[in-house]
Figure 1 (cartoon, rainbow, N blue to C red):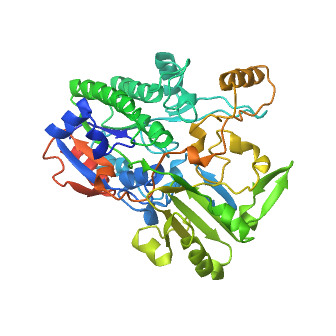
Figure 2 (figure 1 turned 180 degrees about the vertical axis):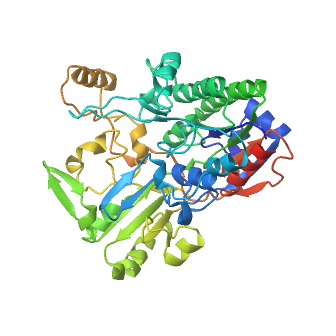
Figure 3 (figure 1 turned 120 degrees about the vertical axis):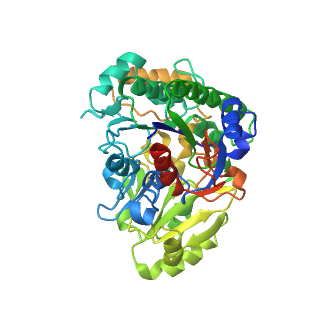
Amino acid sequence: MKRVAVLNVVGLTQSLLNRGLRRLGAMARSGHLATITPAFPAVTCVAQSDYLTGQRPSSHGIVANGWYNRELAEVQFWKQSNHVVQSPKIWDELRTLVPGFTCANLFWWYNMYSTVNYSITPRPMYPADGRKFFDIYTAPYSIRPEIKEALGEFPFPAFWGPAAGSDSKQFSADAVSQWIAQSAEWIERKHQPTLSFVYLPHLDYNLQRLGPAHPEIDKDLQKIDDIVGGLLDFYGSRDVTVMVVSEYGITPVTRPIHLNRVFRTQNWLTIKEELGLELLDCGASDVFAVADHQVAHIYCKNPEMIPTVRAFVASQPGVQCVLGAGEKRDLGLNHERAGDLIAVADASSWFTYYYWLDEARAPDFARCVDIHRKPGYDPVELFLDPGIKFPLLKIVAKLLQKKLGFRMLMDLIPLDASLVKGSHGRIPESPSEYPVLITQSQSAVGETNLKSTDIYRLVKNAVLA
């Protein structure tokens, strides 16, 4: 038996490795580098669930980062309970095979209420008066006060939103990945888990914000290489084997596709007015799309409409293909949570959730970082509205309102989807843009081309070696 740490360097690809990464490049040269045919859809929750269960969404049930709950008639994104993953996880099997086995999960998704021994995940507090306080959730609970005393507060504003991946007066650009790396070292010193999963998201932000070809990405690559290098040295000194994986490759995009807007022109959407603004009423709509990067799940209230909707969506500019029941079955996506149809964007396009036709009528949450209320993923949350003349002054004023106990909206996000320069979700054209697996031993893997479901077996074998 060996102790193993799996570092999830989000967005890492072979093409990025070739841009001068010293520590990760040296690990790939001295050990073993394999490309991973991405999970499909190639998004965080699907990829991680494939890795941790060895199954596809038809079994584990994670069809996207969020989906339409048909029973509740609500779109639900970024839920955290591990109970939504419907297949056994790797730590469950290893616990039956290895006496005294323990596992730590540090910021991989669906972390709450899982059967790992030690977990840390972002979790704000929401008092009854509508305020929001940044925080983390841990198990055991005792980790929470202890690790915050040791490392300080988790830099939550830099985890997602305009501050993520950018230097500010409050945080360094890599503050989140630094904090998570330090938490991994803290857990290792105190608990020595047999298997640790560590999430390092630093590359994810500017690859979407700026696109992979932007020269600023080289700085991000250096920062994540330094963080991984520090963990390699730390774990190496403690006889812990390190494996590096990534979830997907982020590729350049230039065209947003607004499916819900074109559905609205067909009178398929139901829009209700609340306080002068427009809300999408999914339960009353004939057809609507739940957008998730370069993939959109399309739900049809009347099954007889599916052929008509499929042909209509396939005719839209930027749509590469539309998957029906047969294709979903072939891809392991035949699960009740999946859309009746699944649209896949072409290489230069991605899907928005936008449904309003007049920006003045957009819902209040559209201009906020609000990952749970929006009926789809919104990478525009990475930007400050360029129309705000003095954004820092506005932020300070908003924070002062909050501190004084007044209700306020942190409405700083633009409604211009053309700002986004990188996306993922479809299978990239080139394997050089696929996610990767890097191991420290040349004999640990053997294969150079892997499936997403192979990661389960390879991690298990590394522990049992």
